[in-house]
Image (tube, rainbow over all chains, first blue to last red; front, side, top):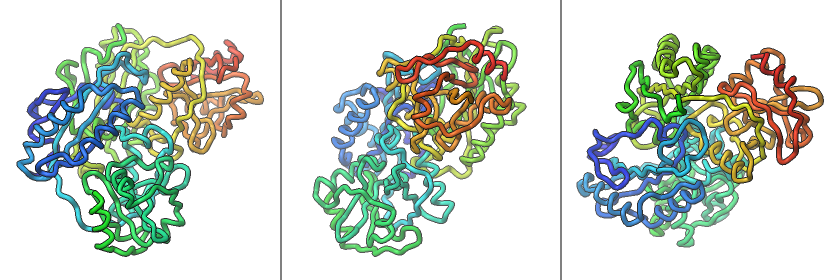
Length: 271
Length: 271
């Protein structure tokens, strides 16, 4: 299956539709205001990796921004699994989008709101080549909803990635607005520093990533405040997210890092 | 005309459609990632207020985030004016939304991109009652695209408004991540301090508002760094945006302000 825009079917509010029949209202607040959340889940070819973790994060985030989850976890699991049949047994990326639904003009929350829940499928091949990273000037807004939750308001991360690529790099390192290291444009970061594997704390602008959480739970990495000075001398680094799992970093700000297959293996074994 | 979700017609990429025929692709990056811009323009009943100012801001913002403007300014003006006929000679709010169009999964900018430009109309009655404001804990991300441009990534402002209302206030005062006063949830702020009318500087997280720009140009307000301490002792305050023009503030953080019709009149005369 090629990496299509959207698979041949789409799951919307509990119903399966053909992709060409599916669209969203111009009044949907996900479209007008980035008012919603999403999860990107790995279809391994036979099941959804970390489904429960994704559902816990989505439910917590939805509660925090006052957005009711309109379908049961069981219904979501069944919908995603049905959708993933289009992947023909191959790995794929499932995207689940929850918006606050349609509303009148303006920022005021509709009361009651009629949220929309949409799942789509795209082909996915896990990248294995180590990535180059460069620190960019666009920061994560520490403590704000846009940094604490995986919301639809992604413009800062988009432009951070774009800035990194304009500098000749594969991806960005974003600092938090408090000056510490936060994350890459769509992944958490882990660095090896003083023989410890560290990942930025949530209050420094990191998203509570699914793989990040698994690795913390397995005792393989730990949360810490990471200053730009620590980043400048770390010996190894990796990116993590639910799709890629773990991916090694080959350089940060033009400084080559140690690409250690054994270290990578240790982290991957924790998943 | 009532304040409808969307008027009876919608203008998309140069074509006028009936609203019920119009929708947006699930792969549109405006929907999936808040990747786009918008302008809200006042239809006075017979023309578009500050049309040229809005077009200059949109073109500058679009250039900054690498998003081509897909229609000429003349075509946009004609489209908006045609759409505004549905307002039957009454005041209305025109919304112009420019997205990066559809793209594959992920943050990478499609190259080339096929941007979408959409205009909708909603009823609008100018509010005249002075507003209560409270300072909230959600900050504007100083220097980031989400604060410098009127992007579709609005979740922080939405939740700031929501927090203010939960505190019993009409609207929020957001500080910038550098600790200075930035703006309300969807308006600029002006305070009277030491006999001067001041408005937060762009680098403190304020959006370059259309009415704000007009009042600066008219010499009626000036840009300044406004600390929370200055806010705590200002004598008068007002909100400004393209729809409301100027609106007086009756209290900030439970402190009553001087509601001066003559001051309000002076500001309105500058428009």
